[in-house]
Image (cartoon, rainbow, N blue to C red):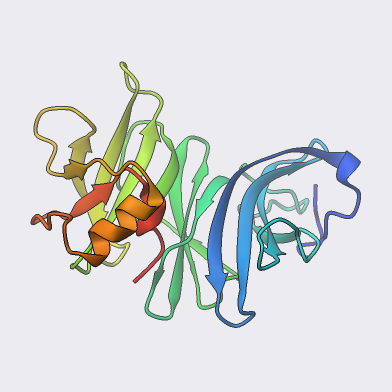
Length: 219
C-alpha cells in the first residue's frame, strides 16, 4: 500500500488504472507537469505526477507520488484520493481533490509538494467529485465547478472563493437563481480571441467559458 512516499511506478503492469489528468506549468523546472489519479495494484487511489516534453507527446520522467490521504498506524492511506486540480494564488498552491465523495483542500509552497490537507473547504454538502477551479477574468475571485453526481437529476454545482478559505455557493448549472453568466465558446482560438479583444462580458460574478482550459490555473 505504498508505504514509501517517494515510490515510483516502475512496472506499469501493476497499475490498476489511471485517469483524471490535469496540467500545471512548473516554473522551477520550466516544464509542463501532468498529475493524475492512480491506483497501484489493489491499493488506495492516490495522485501521481510526471513531466512532459515540449511537444506534449512523451513523458520525460517516471510517475512519482504527489499526494495521498493521511496514513493509519500500519502506514496505509486512510482514504482514496482522486480528481486533483491545483490552482495557485501568489506563492501558494491549492490542491482540490476528492476523498469518499467530498472535495478536500490541501496547500503547498511547491507544485510537487509536500501538501498539507486541512478542513477549510465547505463548498458542498452532497456527494460530488471532479472539482475544477477558474480564476475569473478581471477579478481576484475563483469559481469552482464540480460534478454533483448525487443530485437527481444529475447536475454541476458552482462555488466562488477568493482565498480558498471562505466559499460562496452560486447554484447549479442551468437552474433558477444561478448567479453565474455562461458564454459559449466553440473553440480555443475563438476563446483566446474573445479574451484578447475583451469581448467576453465581465459580470459581477465573472464569466466561465465553456472551453474551461482558457483561464484554468492562470493569473
